[in-house]
Image 1: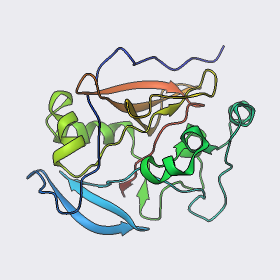
Image 2: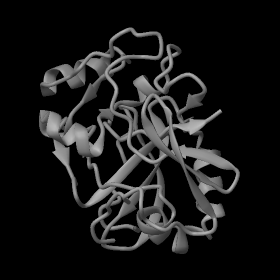
Image 3: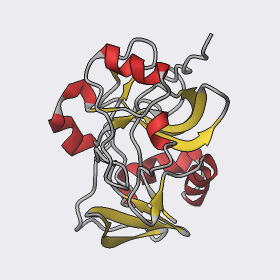
Length: 215
């Protein structure tokens, strides 16, 4: 039986996350940069340069389309075939403009590349480096949502279990490119009620947000 996604609803992680305007003053451990990745705003934190927006693309780097899975049957079929798929939260394009799209892990792992040239989906180690450079789990949460320009957003998820949409404006989830086992990969999350950053591994057929980091 395929391993299910761990439920972090009652775990770690606080109140609404929001993006920062370009006029916001940023902490000393980061600096903003002009759009440098296909129009995406970016931010340098420590030694890393990150997109400060969730990814919202419907094609791979080579221009090939990523299949949109609107129905539950389509989302589940992508898992059965270990194939790439994306969705807007609640299939509403307005959510894509604010929160980006939700991608299954097969999209993240596709050899055609999800991020623009010169960028990639961060590994679990790169995520942990980000958290460490912001002072660890306890301090990183506040900085990721307010003072560094990372602009963390609570985009929710498309759950592995029933292909339903959950937790928008409550939890933000981001894939890493690192797999844990045949059916699960590592992700990081910010939960508004706990003011901490969480890390876990979850089913590859779950839809999470994606951030890109500079090569």
